[in-house]
Image (tube, rainbow, N blue to C red; front, side, top):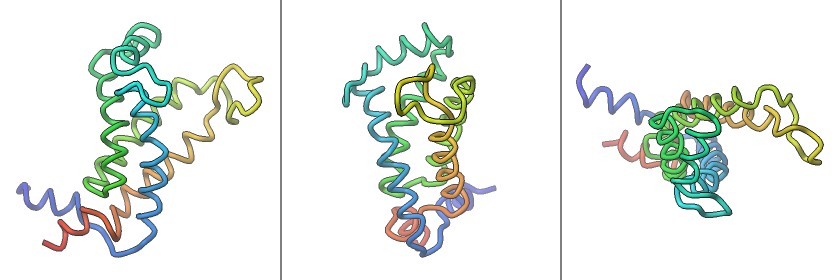
Length: 151
């Protein structure tokens, strides 16, 4: 397959408004999480602190930890702009599924009242649903992908 054909498949999208709302919801929700891990914003520990947690506490290989941090930060920005929507959404879906797997013992519900061991799976299932919809639909109207697909 030629590179131009692959790029065309990656950016192909319809003219619907629905993906715009999906992109913004998932991108804006994931951005603070990525910024915590990469930049230390929003009370986060930054890249070195996050890598220390991933590699030391969780036992994640260094390369996977780095990909998670970069994927959350840059993937969220890509979704907000609508560039590489399918790739960014698929990457975030994999990251969110990995996080859900790590937290599966905590049950289904979020820890609203602090009386559980940790967060449940409901947030991750919702976010993965948004990501899968974006993988299927693409970036939609008002996305860089749509502009690239027209050219």
